[in-house]
Each structure stands twice: as C-alpha cells, then as structure tokens.
Amino acid sequence: MKEIEIFRENNFQTMHRPFKVYVDGDFIDFIEPKEKTKKFLIEPSSKELKIEVDKCSSNSVKLNADNLKLNVTSQIQNGLFVFIYTTFFGGLILMMLDVLNNLYLSFALLLPFAIIVYWQTLGRKNYLRISKMNRDV
Image (cartoon, rainbow, N blue to C red; front, side, top):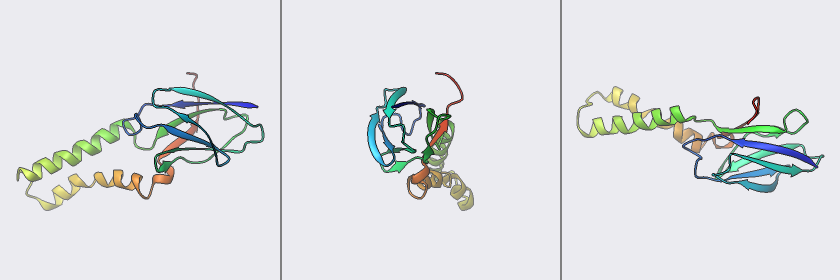
C-alpha cells in the first residue's frame, strides 16, 4: 500500500464544505472542513486522483512516487473572492442609491460577478486545483 497525504488550504469558498477523494474513479473518503491534512492508504497500482466538492471537481493528477504529498486549493483565491463580491455589492448599492448613473461604469462594476458564475457553471470541472506540495507542513 502507498500512503498519500493531502493538504487542504483555507478558502472562503470551500471552508465549510467537505472534499470527496476519488482514486481511479472510486470514492475513497472525505476530507472534512476541520481537517488540514489527511493521509490515505491506496493500492500501489493506483494511477489517478481527483477531488470533488459539491458539483465542482479538480483536475486529475497522475499518482507516482514524486507526488505523494499534494496540495488542494480553489482557483478563486481569498483576495479575488473578496474583491469580486465587494465590487459586485458596491456597484449594486451605488446603482440603487442612484449615485452611479453611467450605464457602462455600472456594467463594469457588475462584470466581476461573471467570474464567480463562470467557475460555478462552465469551469466547475477545474474549480479545485491539485498540485504537488513543495513545502513541509
């Protein structure tokens, strides 16, 4: 049996949602929101790892001796997430208060919300990112 370790980074989008771990298409276990790292025993013949959260999933990673310590992050990092929602709600409030009269500017303020919509619909197959961990936890 091979041991694989998965490190889960904190993120606003996924902080209360469990990750489902799949090896070669078979469900292995959950990584609960309170768990920072989790170790799994997998068959030596296992070839591919994928992680899902709700209806969104990650890229597939080939398992070999080099990548037995993996890091899982969201494509939308915390700073971008806060920027998008602040811009969206700020633009919405300015439009409702009739401070923002320029239609093009109001459209530009609402446009970042399309990033969230994209990652939840068309980009949901690569919503999470699995990468080789290059630091010790």
